[in-house]
Length: 122
Image 1 (cartoon, one colour):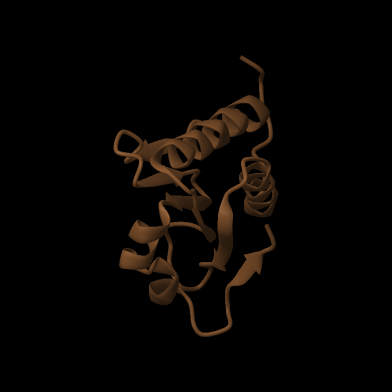
Image 2: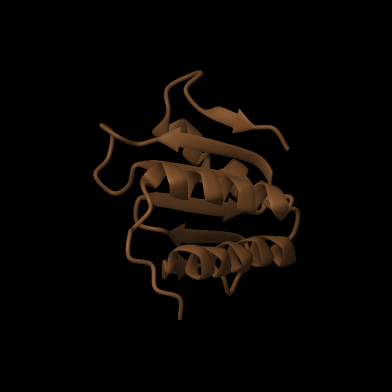
C-alpha cells in the first residue's frame, strides 16, 4: 500500500471527488458547503446515476480512487441495493442516487438555502 503521510484538505478531496464523478458520467452533480451547518463534514456531494448498475459503479470507482490516491478508506452504505449509496469520506459525504430515489428524498432541499448549491456541468 502506498504511504500517504499528509492527509489532503477537504477542498482537495472535494475536487478529486467531483472529477471522479465527472469521469464516470454522474449526472446532476451538486456540491453543498456544510461548514457552520453541521459538524459531520465540510461538504456534501449529491449526484445521480441512470441505473442501479451505474450507481454502484460510480461508488466503487470513487472509493477505489480515493484509496489509491489518498489512502482513504471510505465507509459505504447501500451499495448492495444500488438505489442510493452513501460514501463517507470523512470531510466529504457523497450520495449517489437513482433519479427517482433522489427525487423522493430531496436532500438538496434539506441542506441548502435557495440558490446556494452550485451544480457542476456534466
